Image 1 (cartoon, rainbow, N blue to C red):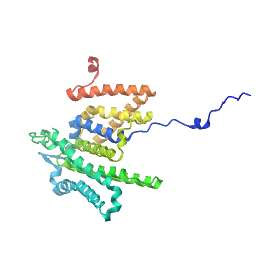
Image 2 (cartoon, helix red, strand yellow):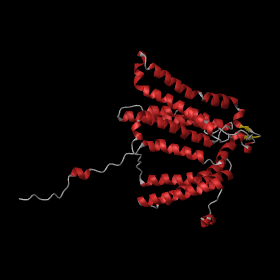
Image 3 (cartoon, rainbow, N blue to C red):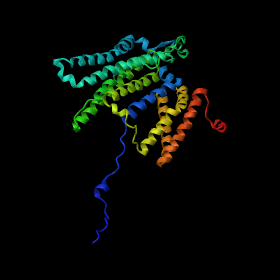
Image 4 (spheres, rainbow, N blue to C red):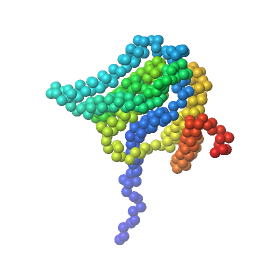
Length: 350
């Protein structure tokens, strides 16, 4: 007797779903921050920096930070440099103690101590080298702030803000520790990493704003330095704790909504810097103007997101975003290099 055909497949095979490809953390932890730093370094619009610099300028070549010597020079300027020194020297002392008989409990953390030392030193040397090659002027040397333009330069990135942002090394060193897989261990690790990250970002911004109040740097210098130091610390983190990540294929799993939102942010803000530059140059640093700028940013972001999200199908969305990015990048280049305003007449010429 012939066996009946199998009408029902294996239930285990039915329940199985194809696993999504794992995302590579090197994309969002290293490549994206490095790209943002390069973008800021290449396209820094003066009106945006000047908009945030004028509140600290008192006129006649004087800056607000110069009037309060104790706070800005003694505490923020000189005192801020001590934080990376404490972290680096402290890690060196703990590393040396781990080789003594009394420091056996420190032996499992030698890699973390070594990483912190190398990361902080690398950040410091890299910022010094980048500043030496930079031709970006400081605010106090610009004519608009009644400064002397002769010999201007070597002000990008922000060296003093790096004294705070170099401590990203502590965040990544803690991230490299192994904890128990229990919910309590995971929650504690996430909380500790979040607190360290928030403290480092806050410290770096405070030191950066302190130097901006003295006319030494613009806001773009501080923001770029944050991404610069983060990229260095992230690269060394993967090199120390996850070297295989460099071999792994860099793939990122995003939903259609997340992809559309990321594209909208890129199109609305990064590729519309000339628009925001004109807005900042026409306004002043006040609550009403800041509210207007925020409203414009939100409206523009919503328009871009709706426009991208209308392209619902996956391949149409990818092709549309690619086309929009190419057109907007070309417009950004011509606007930045030649001051060209992209209007209907220019589109007809093209």
